[in-house]
Length: 192
Figure 1 (cartoon, rainbow, N blue to C red):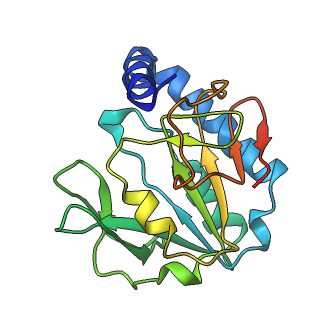
Figure 2 (tube, rainbow, N blue to C red):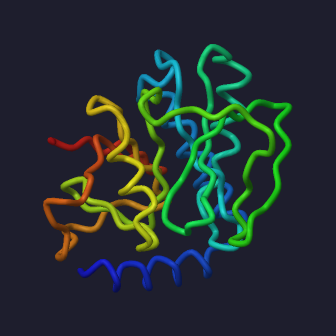
Figure 3 (cartoon, rainbow, N blue to C red):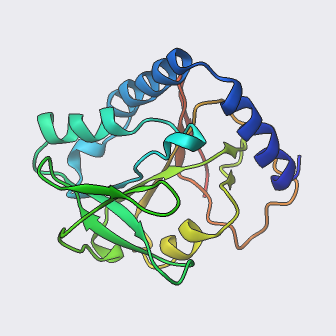
């Protein structure tokens, strides 16, 4: 399936999903993430804040669990820049004030900036992924450009509401592939 077709299909699927199903799937992903991955050994983890109108996986359960159970792990979130192409990254604490930007994305105010090379893991938003670890986002390339700034050993973990498709037909060598992807039912691990 082509990326453009997957985007359309997954956005329609999300719009049809009930609030209860979205909440349940988000909770299942959060529980599985901590059960079957080693995030607690990290020093800094990048987490996206959910865009509610896009019906994204709710990462607040993950963030609060880090704050509550693993306070030594710094939680870092992205902020879209005015150029419309790039992200900067900021520390998120329970005291951080948030405001929504023009795209309805929550962003921290007056927070400490964190450089991409300081990150040990990135939890990636996605619309779909395939059995080879290729991912489909919204098509703007924010994360593709950001991931190129990270250390080569950064752990790339997709968070998905749904299991993978067999193959993304137009994936190419320049796409940044996942190390693993957490779904409500399992953790998918990929050769890189």
